Length: 175
Image (spheres, rainbow, N blue to C red):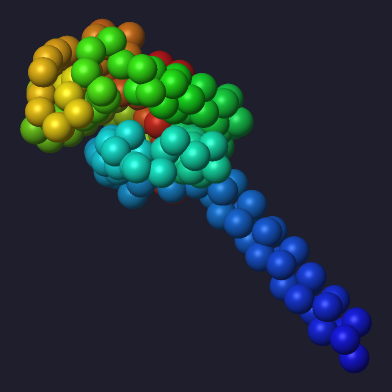
């Protein structure tokens, strides 16, 4: 009887892993081009502010979540890029250029579609800004720098490309 219970538990665990893998394959995406961009930026901000980000497991979870906003064919590469970016952020934040820690926040007014067809769109992040604040041990801002979001990420074309796959919109490198 103990063996049956053990096997049932093992099967439940394995089926749970399969469901998680399937969910990752489906991805988050968005119902509109604007929604996927806004959700990605919100999760990106949340990831960078996560106090658990120093833990490798937390960075892996965030890297997978952020990558799931990208087209299914791009997720593996994006997961690696997100992991590298988060690792770099944490490593830089342990010994920031100034103060005792740095924070990064993305702000914007709204998003809007600049151009679209049935399968692709270009989404503008209106007044998108990345702000880096260096803080001292008492959490006071000692230096702050801002930059235009799209310029800093190398997208001076005015927007972020998105693609429609199986009825949902995803970020894409194409475009």
